[in-house]
Image (cartoon, rainbow, N blue to C red):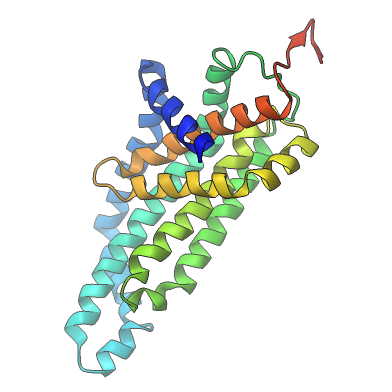
Length: 244
């Protein structure tokens, strides 16, 4: 818990830097414009599709078509929001994360040597797989959202998992070796999920929701680099091009 709080404190402290704000706003603005444009064109088609599939067809059969229409529109907007979040997350993980890591590595984490592999392909594949699993989980759990309370809990849990799966690896891939990453993943599984859950809760706040993917990238970068620093037992520096 203390590690999560520390990562969050450092995340918000980093926002004092105008350069970091540029990284945070970029994915959000692009995703917002892109998906609002698609929503104007495709929301009706999505609602019609939802009305033709369970559980909406079940509600219509029960004689409460009005409820089915309300839930279909709600589900349509939630799907658009989820897609916007996914788009912002992909941009944050693939394009913004390397810039954030470079920025942090030049500052408070100068003592953490980059001993991993900076792979654009690996980061992209990891983010795409996480997105596919997230979308599949969203559709598979959709019928359970009719159960009181689960419509709030399930989206948070899915997004928390998605945040951890997407950003935990990308935050350490440049600095951690394969063995170090496996160790961090095993030792910090629950705190990383908790950090992802905090970001998921923030993502559901009005206005700031689409800023969260870049904030999540920043917070996971702080968490991962600090955890790596501690696992190495102190400073690890690079001298004359050799990693020690």
